[in-house]
Length: 97
Ligand SMILES: [Zn+2]
Image (cartoon, rainbow, N blue to C red):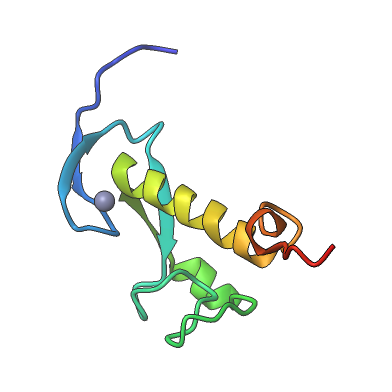
């Protein structure tokens, strides 16, 4: 392992901002160039099993650390909302006792 500084410049897939990254450690996001969306994601935003063709033509785009952090926060928030037992009852519990 070498500790070389990031030398590759690219545009973030999510925010289109240019940023410097190390191709070995950057978060890459597979995108189907035909739809501009991740393989398996429909234009309606729903997910389905990606076709082998979509996976084969998918290219991996870099995502900047800002967007990775936002995506992680969004994922956490949606997981909390999707799971009623996680942090939900603390504020929906009524005083009916
Ligand atoms: Zn970004």
